[in-house]
Length: 405
Image 1 (cartoon, rainbow, N blue to C red):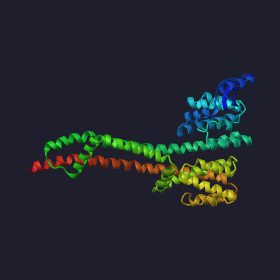
Image 2: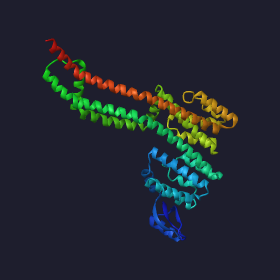
Image 3: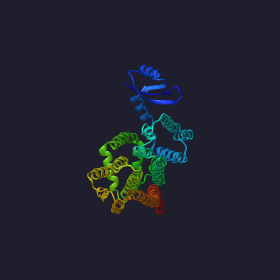
Image 4: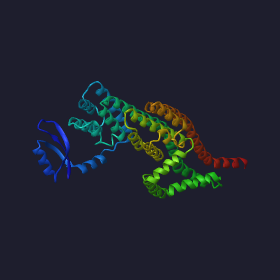
């Protein structure tokens, strides 16, 4: 069996590695004979599984931590601070315990002689393959500060795009929640009181009022049935969305939505070109860069597109020809890639193109939000007005009939 251990050697230096042994006792004894005092010896497979289950940060938290980490580490390393000392400083100013543990583990491994990219590989939930590849390229080229700077730019752009989308969606989502809450209150608390009044009047009700009264009675009498149906349906929907066919169906549906589909394509293209450009600027080989970019594509159609481009480039075709699907890639983007390949400046051109597309996408999102917010308010006003008119219409009819009598 393979065991993972942590401990100290005779010089007091922290060490950690793996060792083959039949049991924990034999592993501890073998380490003692090597002059290592073990403080922790665990099954390597079990420890890896526990680490993966324990440390699964949210995407926003991961990007925020990684953005600060790469920028601060780049500044420290660029000014001549030893890597282990820089990691120790970042560990002390970690904002969360889990992130502090990750940085502490990186520091311990680097102090033991491991490369930073190898240490990051032990925490794939925090450092993805793109991050590790850029760090490895910087270490092999002896230019780690430049790679950290490129990685910091990439992560900050991803975080900026995420914040712009989330920020644009917060207010419309809040309006929808408020609208739903107002309607539920009207149907479950207000309408029943009017129903008793209408019964005492003993007058025929308009069709809209009858519809609202029936809907209110159904919600109050059969809410448990609706809840019993909604929970299993929601569970089945979530399980289906986790399947390959479910994700592909949603990806296809999102791309076909009017107006919104074009925005999704633009964001996906900007992300693809930025990641590929950053990797190529970091002197990552094109084949490896395409493989990493394919893994970073969240939409299956773009993942398949990059996979086809990988096969085409392997055969010797140009990247522009491989990325010629106009359903996913705009013709202007393809022509820009052609120009970049001809001039030998593909990497900087891709990052410049991504900057332009991200700026355009932010303007589009703000414009769409400015249209969507008043539209939701109008729909909310119409619904509330419909309920109010339906409630007071019988009273108006009764007043008119009494006045006429």
